[in-house]
Picture 1: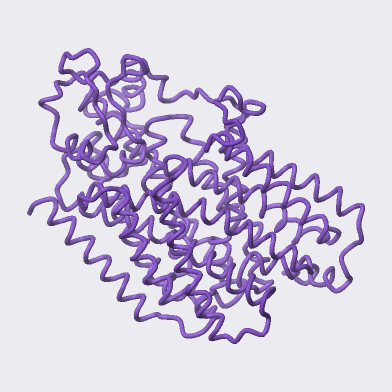
Picture 2: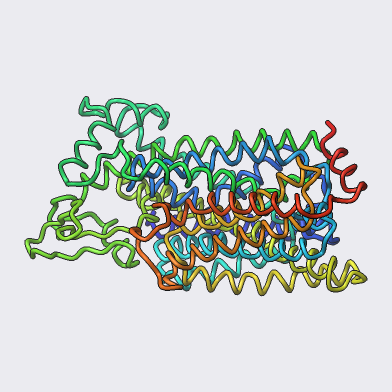
Length: 553
């Protein structure tokens, strides 16, 4: 069967499944819309959390950036994995016991202030829109290659699909759709990895195959280091980033994870605190399956790519090369006009530009796997991007309808009115998200990394100090959040968007990249919050008693 037919068939079946689930599980109350009625089982919630967590950045881009950057790319692997452990053990059970729908709801009640709630809503919207830009670009990438449309058209198609089941089902529809999406994405991620591991090493387990000898009797990582050295790239197993930047990026990703509102809200969908702990454990297991496989895929793909294209006649390159050329994400320029593809580390002589985000999706084609595997890859990549985009849309809509409208602007609004407002907010959110998907600031993983920096700079200190410090008051947390988010936004816009005079890597403050600056902004948040709270009135007694109650086992 032709490749395109397989792709349409598998993607069509999975989309029909998602839409069917959304119709079956449509929300009829605000509780079902915001937290799926609070009765999701721990295993199902673990799968949904894993799907929510493993976005287009995890599925499409993480292995891609490791593949091209080698050791330097491992910061994403360490930061995102460690961050989920931090969230599951440090924050999730306490937030679940507090029992509110959203993170701004927690901050507004804990800090007894609608101003704090409004600042938290602003931060939630900024974080979510930055994050969703990466997801919508991921959707566009998949459609542009597999469904033969340009990236922008792909973004618009993805917007329509997400909008359908997010508006209809709310968190209830999203949760059960994400269970199905996790099954699709993990199967799609593992099948090519197992195939290629068998082909290159004779070992079916990719994690073991990556560190084993290949069919030529040479360890794969040694072989890849040799190829990199020969072509003038930095060695794959050594890094080029400074230790300080590696540490700060990893910390920003970890701490940002623990402040991500669309992941935190998942722990409100289970019946009790014990179930929140169980679902966190299940989610960690489900996430680990993909995260331990990603480095193996990166090694396999990088090795195959170099061997397939480097110093090869352009006219004899396989079909996958021309397929990706048509998307504009892979560009060959014959600078010396010798007809050979010079893929080298020297930018002046390099003739091949490859978008980092395509490597995972192109991997099955590079390895010449069956067409049904390529169709499965398309469905998995779409599942990863759409699942997270849906969760983010819910955060945006609930921040507007519940935290802003219900809690601040119009407290007497009816439940039906609030539900209508949530759905209207979802519509406008997906339109704005589509714009950011068409005009993203960077490739998927870097765009998403900025969202983690924003979450670390704003939410993480407010949540942690809200749980573990009875002295932290509204003045302190508001001041800290404003300083943290402002610093991170300024740095991001200056060095990623070229505003405020712009700048290059040589102009970074203390040599810290925008992806790592969230850690410094978070430190500024904490310092300002502690100083201001120490100079102002302590929280009321009832708030301090509430904190004691949250922390009781």
